[in-house]
Length: 95
Image (cartoon, rainbow, N blue to C red; front, side):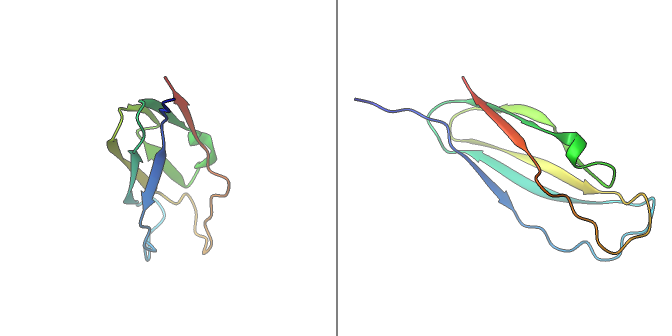
């Protein structure tokens, strides 16, 4: 019996961006790795990031044993000292 799968690993090293002025932005990198044997597509629910964060690319395909770097950008739309995004979803579908 053989078994093949896709397995995504998210590597995210987020350092507090420090002071970011309203109307400015700072971008951090998120690496997504498919360490499985099958390719798989991914798609972020970008609406969950809004209005103060965004992610690019929002979707793509990862071949087996491949990785992609995703930019997560913080662009505050108002002055506030506690910005959070809870329950961010990245949907993964194997082929």
